[in-house]
Image 1 (spheres, one colour):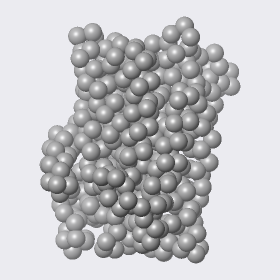
Image 2 (cartoon, one colour; image 1 turned 90 degrees about the horizontal axis):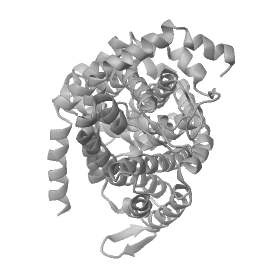
Image 3 (tube, one colour; image 1 turned 120 degrees about the horizontal axis):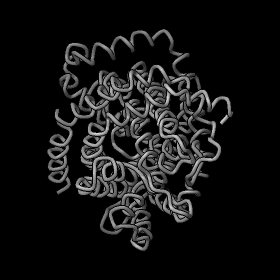
Image 4 (tube, one colour; image 1 turned 180 degrees about the horizontal axis):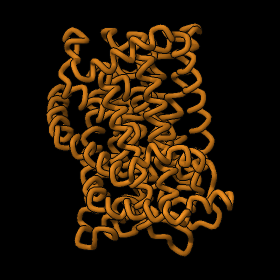
Length: 477
């Protein structure tokens, strides 16, 4: 039965993530790059400068940095560790090239999303913010397109409950814990109607569900507070160990880079037919890239709308740094580690096992220590992603139900339940379901970005021509 379900899901996934959607997302990023005159190149230093500097006097629920951390909490997760490994093993080393290409143009997309989110958001008297694609569709494109906003919100709820938010993250956590503590299934327990599972999986799912419940019940501010602590700390630890791995194997680095570029355009010639065509490399690279950094997906602007800021362009720049950190920095390091250690060619390894192999064989530390570090990073990355996506999907549901907060509270418990059952989903089904909902969610958002690209260009031009960015530095915002 599972085989048939996986086959059906794969066919749907291939249809959703076909050439049209990839072209739509890349074309959107290229268009926005042109209309903002290469904002991701010209203004990246300024964006990084403003990243941790909060604005004074802005309206919103949380600080600009907290909004970024909330967005990063949802993006820096299993996609950076498991997703990159999945892309490379299925699409070859060339998938990393296409992941980076998508991320480069995705920075302009993420900038535009953050700008529009603040421009068209609604802030209640109590400071409660609601914004994102559903509002810049409704208020920017017009009331007659409210149905498109509703479609986005519906898929947003599905992505949170069945995709990025729960199953894929929890599955990644339980797999990492299982691989470290009980890889040979020496200690198992029967789970009713599901079969036999390692005790490590059962215990981790229980602990994770409790921890998620303790945070998400507290709402956005509690999620933001936790994210501000965990995300920067764990990102630095992961980057430090990845840098050590790359420096230790510096002689193999040039060859790995050449292999990645060559495999991006002629994978069969480079890999000897181990993986498929250039189209497959593009598909897996772009899909996993979108999964990781969420540029074009429309999720990050939901967090950006809650930022305490008065200036849409400023928040757009801060939002843009999320894609840079997530993919250009972290995913690149993961991908290079996998390619230069040859982990992607080892038969029988899937998901986190691929990255674990790379760390164990690439770091100058005992294999057990390297595996432990990766496990801890994955657990905390995925945990914060679960928190971030609860917030995203709650806001989508709030819009979908016209502000019915009772429905939102019920949803929270369903979300916690999905976290609990996540480890018992099959790996292939988990990632395929996440891919499908990702693609469906991106479509209405990308339509809106095309339609409102003129607004983005005008806001950007006015902001810099009037020297507003200089005012922020003078005020030491």
